[in-house]
Length: 370
View (spheres, rainbow, N blue to C red):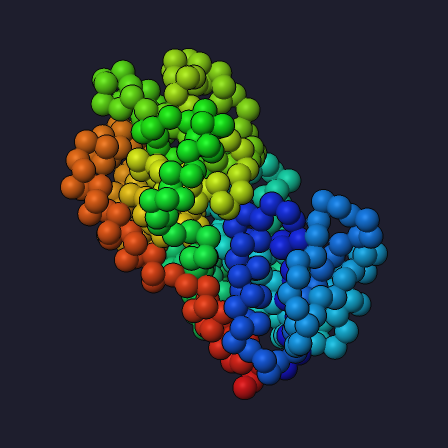
């Protein structure tokens, strides 16, 4: 078969969720499939230095560049299957279409989007649900949302979990662990610290986490820091004023986007990873944290609890007191912390990009009639 994958998301130098998923899917497909021909659609202009085409090697995987925005249909030529790794305009004809849906946040948490974004997303999903031959959902939670908001036959969708890169996210040995001290010093981080990873936007629920931290400090149940990793997103303004009002300014460190090597160190050295998101389609940071041996606190909603299972403490994301109580339990009970670390490491092994690629390849064969 001639299979095309839209690789727009992997051209960015700072890959977040969709970019990570797409890159690892292509990388693992290349390892397991030497039969089908793959065209990797890359909409990148000449002299665009903000984007770069990663090295993928030759063989049956080749990039198809589109410097003049001609679109997938004109750039890719004759193909049997077109896979869009995230909701996007489906500018292709004469082939089977597969779309990966990571979440339906614009439906389930509309207050985190502008009216224009909601309108654009609605148009995309209408087209996807009408034209896609198969929709891959990254969790059962996302699949339920899809079928709740769009009346589709059950056989039009399936669930394929995403994975974790164990070459990047793993428990560090003692020697390199101590070599990482320079990072902590350079970033102004002292131990113990809590870690939060995610785009800074209302859906991620940083506000209630900050309130929980203020409560813990006021009641002398935790005197450490909160380290926040992630780029600023929609409606992130006003956090500095809110932190000032809570009087915890010296206890919060915003690092912005960090490299994978830095992120691994932070996961390893955190007292706990706290992820009280209101809604997630999958929740990459949960699995990454577990894979590094960080005890996890996460929400009892959407896919967070589905992915974490019994390997994390679950909290009500709308209740700062619930979040604070969970933090106090982990930081005050070493036996509980060690038990969660062990459970998390075991749970993280259930998520593999190799498995993601194998199951995706089966969808290609099913849709392609093989």
